[in-house]
Length: 431
Image 1: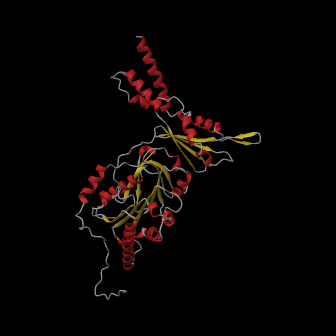
Image 2 (image 1 turned 90 degrees about the vertical axis):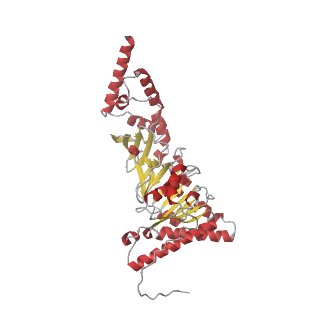
Image 3 (image 1 turned 60 degrees about the vertical axis):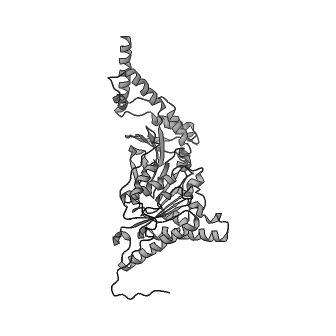
């Protein structure tokens, strides 16, 4: 009898507290965030006055809470970014609240006490994550649940390929190569660059098998992209720098062929001309083509030619149906050719070791603060920057994707050339 009374009282108290939270009553996280900021040294002394971070607005969302603060004069957004981990740890240094939605998951036909114990244990081990941004006000997003550490590969649609799952509502983010033709990838080794390249290629082969053409350069000795060597979509593949120059030259020649054809037709780009073919130049570990690391004059000349062709494709290729995907695990200096970087409006950066490396890829810091989780990255376009978890693609998925497209060696046509249609035309050729 006593146990039933205690259990009923406990359930009633928890349900009442959960119900009041579900009604959207103010969360105490806003006050706690302000206190953490004050204690971490973000207040500013102005004579006898102390200027603090002031809460302007807060909003409850499906994924958690969004708070907007006015920062004091004398502080910058960078000051708050430097304290992000302090704020996150402070928020997690507390007992967790059980919500009405948590109670709805309980099965009242089973042992209720054991379920409550498991629920309480789960809530104590849950970790909130925060995200900071700035638009004139400091925006602090507090997520009730951490971002997933593993995401299953799902192909995109057409020229849209999956990038990953974002924090907000766990929605898939896609990269559209028709809107943003070139992508630069950066990050420390084993964090997900090659995995992303494989998922991109598999999505393209699954969605556009008849119009995808690949020029692949795998300067890791072929261990990452060798699976695609014998599929019909691969025009050329290279594993060494001298082979890379040959592959890039083939891509450049084809780009010029399309340029001449568009000029003949009087069209501005392949979309207007109705040309469906797209050409993807994928370079995994572009750092191997860094001119500064050349030992001999011949090697320097070869790498310089490779970088020159990459830059030309980056400048001219967008309207001609050419797309660049360039990856490096050593993002410093001129490892990524400047023309490539400046013409790539999309950048995906996994965890790096320093703010300097982050700035090389993203032009700003941030990637060095990413957690040590494989696949976690910052996806940045011209107008937005998001943290997401990139999809994991398995060898079985790669095998199943390429199997229908494998052709016999020597059967593949080296290059698809668009020839203009001529009737009774005199042709002049330079000899």
